[in-house]
Length: 350
Image 1 (tube, rainbow, N blue to C red):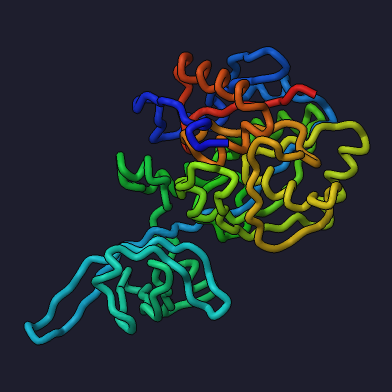
Image 2: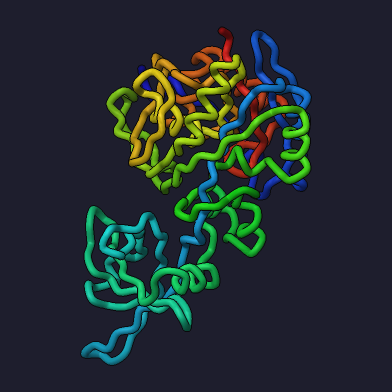
């Protein structure tokens, strides 16, 4: 299975840099059986069946991108350097792993000032990343980060425009609750209050799980034999209640439909024993063609980057040839791609 099997040509104009407004007005490509139907996300209550259960990732994206200044007094006098840090994950010792640019301009023990309230000291370098210790913790840190930080937009958006105040709303789901992600579960960005109310009125149930999406979601696959690729690990939790709700829906004949690849990867991690069970920990599950799904019956997901692990995941669910047809249709009909783009509802043939 070669990396080139998951490649396609995408016109630059189809990469979305802003989401649809309102959220549920985004387009939705409904693929079920041999049919592909062009719909709108707000049509979901009429597409799904009473008794279906949507699985929603309630992770909350932190404004993880920080811009600051390092000041130094050397033999030639005072100097300063502009430093950018993107927080990756908190560590058990209270520090944060971060991408620091340029890391070479920051020495261990030096401090970067991000705002009047927030600063951090570089404690160590590890695998090309910095380990930062902030001057604040707990709620004080959260408040200062919310004020000083910017949303960590995906590289293909950040290359076109900087993050702004709109992104703090746009790049967050309406049900975001548990802080820790540095990338959004983007299929979930299409849901708003009216859509959620309409789904509930139709008898479509919803279960919340948590997977803190890491920056590794944007890392390219660098091996030609995709089966040798090593996935990044992300922390997740499927509560006892969530596992019980999923199991009850399966027992009653309803469909389990993760909203987004993050929710899918998490529930399949929790069902590796053959049935869903409460689960907590780090998962590096890699889903590619040949994977046997234990609980997933369908998937709502956006359109993904060429040669990405997410293309491999949807190919595992729908089949490689079918995914090629789906993406050709989406490009021909000018669907908007990637994190702020349109969505799809993928129901594999049984």
